[in-house]
Each structure stands twice: as structure tokens, then as C-alpha cells.
Length: 293
Image 1 (cartoon, one colour):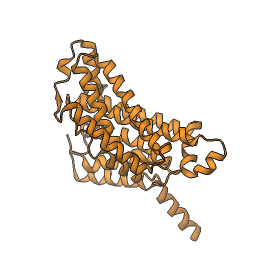
Image 2 (cartoon, rainbow, N blue to C red):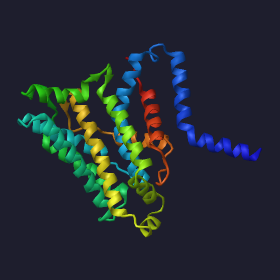
Image 3 (cartoon, rainbow, N blue to C red):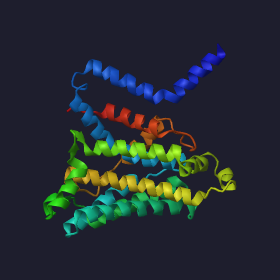
Image 4 (tube, rainbow, N blue to C red):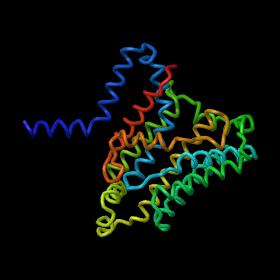
């Protein structure tokens, strides 16, 4: 009997996020006819994209025993860089690539402060959060950059810019497709690659991981770079959808991402968790915030 209780407890602990998501969805389907429509489910996926993409990067950071408070500011600064370049005549595709590279660089800076600077991840990313937000405000003079798509002369570039945020494929929003693709990629990285095992080892016991040959410094820098890239990608989707880049974009997104990772069962002390748990946490938050279409 005691073994059965332990097994049940372990099962509930392992799958709590999935059970909560299913129960929540079933209850809302029963009480709200608008919730269970196909259009609303697609709308739900679109709404989940922004938090989901950031949360995937955050999962890697937290698994390595870190935290990244700068993702919202990284999102804003990358988006502003992209918008400024487009408004100054840079081809939209090139501007988006530069913005993604900028996100990686911003993530690397956070990683270097944590590893080489020997700062606590909370303090290091609090510093970069403030600095990146300030840079976004300086670049825009505190004002939003609007009508971005209209300033793109080339139709191909204009199509590419609009596609990432507003496009559809077989009636499925492109942002939702990007979310599903990212989920598959992160699942593969964390579960099927050597680098994924290094992330878990670093978060579980950094000293032991170092003794068996894991480059702790490089692993942590890479996970922060990944987090920066995902934040920048989310920023591009947002400005494409809104056709505007604001220096306040992404405020509070770091808290939603951390909440989704924690809801998904990832240990905040690192070394334990699943990307599938994170997507369950993301969907729980999306369902709670859902406004039926």
C-alpha cells in the first residue's frame, strides 16, 4: 500500500502540469462554448507563442542553474534595432537577421557576466535588463517606431516581414508553427544531444560536471545566448504583428516565462526538468489569459 502511495505521488508530481492543463481545458470547454471553437484554439496557440518561445530559452538557462531576467529588455532592444534599420532603408530580411544576431550577443554578455564576472545570475541579468531597456529608450528617444511595413519598398522583403507575425499556412498561424518547430528542436537538443546532457550536468552538480570534462563556462554562455536568440525572435514576431516597435515592448515577459518553466516542473535550482513540461506551463498560462476569438 505504501509503495502504491509513493508511486501515485511520483506520478502526480511528474505529470501535474499536464493533468492541470487537461482539467482546466475540459472545465472551460464545458462552461464556455466560445472556448471550444477551432478559431479560439488557433488564437490560443498564437497567444502562447510569445511566452512559449521565451520560456524555451529560459528552460535551458534554469536547467543550467541560472536565471535570465533580461529577456524582456533583450526582446525590446532587438526589436528596436530591427525597426530602426528598416526605417533607415536596410532590407527587412537583413535587418531581421541582424536583430537575431544582436539577441545572441546580448545573451552572451549576460553569460559572460555570470561566468567571467562571477556575478550571481539574478544580479547579472538584472543589470543587463536595466541596461538593455535603457539602450532601447535611447535609440527610440522614448517614442514608438510605427508603420514599419509601409517603409519597406521591396515587396519580397515586405512579405517576409509581415509573414513572421501575421502569416498563415493551411489556416495555421505562422507564429504557432514556429512555436511547434521550436518545441521539437529544444526537445531534440535537451534529450538527444551531448550538449543537452551537459546542460543537465551543469545544473545538477557543476563541480562534478567539470571533473568529467564539461566546459561549464562555455555551456552557460551558450544557454544565455540561446535565451537571447529566442527573445529576439519573439521581438521580431511582435513588431511584425503590431507593425510597431516600442522601447517598453516585452515588459514583464521574463516573469511569465519563469512562471511557465516553474509550472512545468523544472527545478529552479537546475538539473531537473523537461521542455514538454514547459509547454504545458505555457499553455496553462495562455488558457488562463485566453480571450476567445
